Length: 335
Image 1 (cartoon, rainbow, N blue to C red):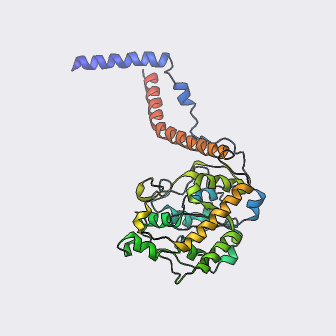
Image 2: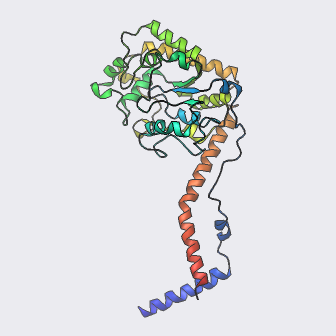
Image 3: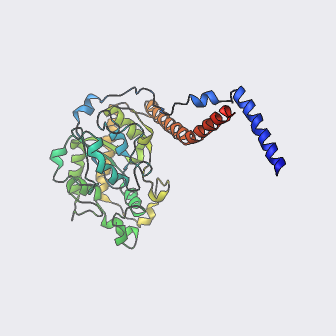
């Protein structure tokens, strides 16, 4: 045992002589690490004239149509001064019930004269009686109706009324017209409260979508929708704009098997969704938004993602860096 102590002591002396005389590889770089990593200067850091005219924005969040879209909204210039580029509405940054958590703190982190915070007690509020108040300021994302209801059925975090039904086809029939109801009625969560909806109601909802919404995105065209949103409103694309903050059941399913619905089709919401696609396509043409023109937006989003990952990595490594430097200091000052 004594011999082992002698050997270990000799090793420490040798290491001390080697490390303290010659700088360890990368030590200077470690000392110069800037843990306050920032993004490059934004190239589009102001609202467009169109975006400014649409203030205050109001997010109509239709169930299972993209909670993540709120990230793109709150990072628009001047809307939410209390959030930085790293802030995001998801379960990693806030909590499992991140949407409720965000709406609770929204009045503190956002400028309520520029962004109308939703209620944490009614995150999927309808605009049936408040449409005239919000007209021209509304932004939303829509989803293919059958995909939307299947996503709601398989949601492991929120029930959306699914537990009341024995199978997805009967649930889908009960939830028919939910998107339409949200535009002309009120409560839709956990189930729509509108009764006896007709095609006339669906066409009214479609008219409201065209005349009263400053932005209409399509979930199935998420990347193009984000790019179009920034083209219309300003600001830069961030990694959080492209984040799926609530993948159903923790998976990455983007398309469900509609055969589970046993032939059911939501005719009412189909009318609304078709109008949403027409509006979306018209705006793509008007603002010259294509996959090619969106490359800078998407590249900036990837850049911000790499910057965030690098900062997280440096943060995780900082403890080990500091321990190394403390050990180095002790070793080199020991007499």
